[in-house]
Length: 308
Image (cartoon, rainbow, N blue to C red; front, side, top):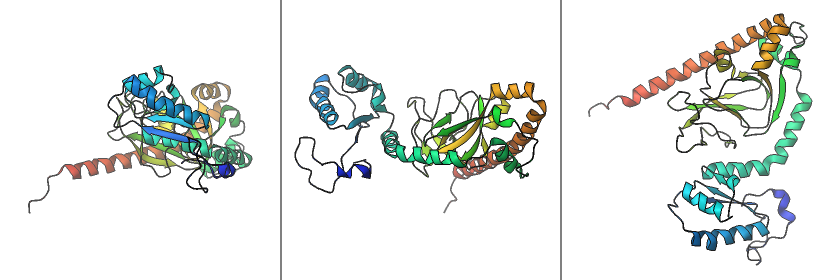
């Protein structure tokens, strides 16, 4: 069962009220039903099996989730009041990730609160990025144009095909960048779901399983770096997806604030543009390296094997 250690003091019993086989067990909080191999279901089966399961779990405070469910089966479960729209996930992995995030949420929230106590101003972070003295005054006043966000693991900043309305500076934590395995930025295809991926995961489940394309991890953003700026300044649809893989603190710049800075503080706007240009140069270099690797890898795989 997926459950926090803090619940060890709760008496353990089975759903039918009998004693648990192991006194050292911990109470179950989530049950994930994987329907990946279920090709159909009638109303009798839904009511006689899954409604009973749902009722028993509800009495014990257990949340039941359904994964990889066909549309017609999903409609049947909803129409019989066995599940609601929030109970369904595209894959079992994404459902388990959501459960894991719920169990870790108190710890993540505490970590995020701790991070906010040690984060310095945006101007200092930008000076550090440029390798300049932190007490330099040429970025004074820039903080008012940035918005600080304290986010949990799994927070999605943007998906593939989204409009580039913001760019971000990572102050603490970690953010993963994903792109389609075959490239491109088809609108609405391959958008990252709102659940967190396990640490080290190289692929991500997608929200629209019909139009889904595999999203592959291409880069991890570390504290002190920007992300999302290339699409923002290129005014092109996002070709990558970004989301936090651990509790993080980021500073975001919206397009409205960026344009307001241009009007209200032109010298500050020019200085920020210099900083962003340096970041973009690094990002474009990394992207070129990734594309070169993918091309070499694909070319190698397409070559016929040498005759023996």
